[in-house]
Image 1 (cartoon, rainbow, N blue to C red):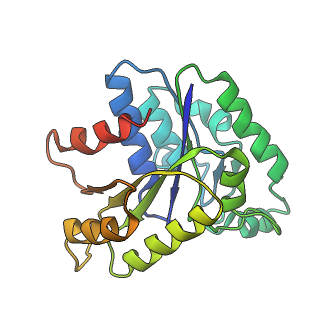
Image 2 (image 1 turned 90 degrees about the vertical axis):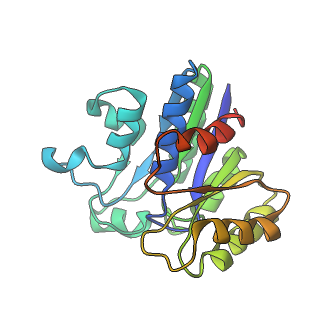
Amino acid sequence: MTALFVTATGTDIGKTFVTCGLISHLRQQGRAVDAIKPVVTGFDPTAAAVDASDPALLLAALGRPRTNIPKISPWCFKAPLAPDLAASREGRTLDFAALVDFSRAAMAVAKDVLLIEGIGGIMVPLDARYTVLDWMTALRLRLILVAGSYLGTISHTLSAVDVLMQRNLTIAAIVVSESIGSPVPLDDTAASIARFAAPIPVYALPRLIPDNAEHTVFARLGELV
């Protein structure tokens, strides 16, 4: 079994887009893929909104019904805030030990490939004490770091790389997911990040992928598993 953790430099960067694309590619290759996104905020449980939620998109990529959302995303909160604040709004807390146990349990039963999608950026608080960084450190999986292509992303991405390396975490790849409206060309941004992040491979991923272009990026990510 191979497991990867998909994290990002911030929120709404493209983690789910990348995870779904990798799921689809691996399934086309005949691989048995599982995926979980244990923590979700901004979750609207109404029928009209559920299909657009991150866990529903993951399940669609897996070819499974949205009724499985509780199985892959047991901690769903309504407020579009960091998990600690979103949970507090509902009089709840996120049990960090239970989150780690849930992730390890998924790793134990996965037959071939497991993708764990985090929430927000690497330092997003999960509760009063722990962040996503602590979650990743507890699991010690190889990481796919998703970054945007917006102005300022180079500093954000290299800062994230530095923090992850200080925890001795392995970054298997950086994916620069195109930010809509960015004044900087996607390829230029990816090339600049690659110069400073070497030897970590850096891939530029257009938001609107032309026919067959997805195979280039996702095939390379697929080689990680």
